[in-house]
Length: 125
Image 1 (cartoon, rainbow, N blue to C red):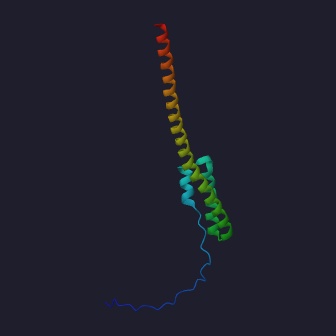
Image 2 (image 1 turned 135 degrees about the vertical axis):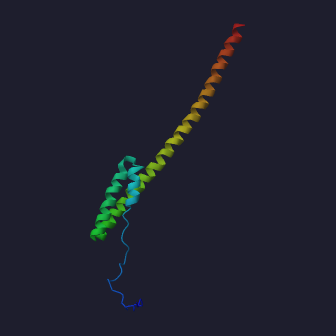
Image 3 (image 1 turned 90 degrees about the vertical axis):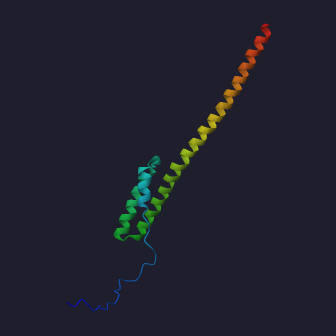
């Protein structure tokens, strides 16, 4: 049995010129993450809607509309991520500062009341 096959020489098929600009990104994974885990003021859901629109436009071949919706999806994803990261950090900082302030206030008030009580005890003698 002869297993030697001759290779056929094929010329590379031309599919047309390569695109001048790359296809726009749709940011769908980022939008899904923001929707499920960090949905600050429903911005993750809005970003998901624009990401799906961008993917639909990219598949249909409307590159300009896909680029527009991709830009909107990136903007809302950024806002959702920043809001979901910065606001809990800000809230934590406010809680820590409030606890420190209240502890200092409590120490001063304890000092004030002990001073008042010790002074009235000295006057009674």
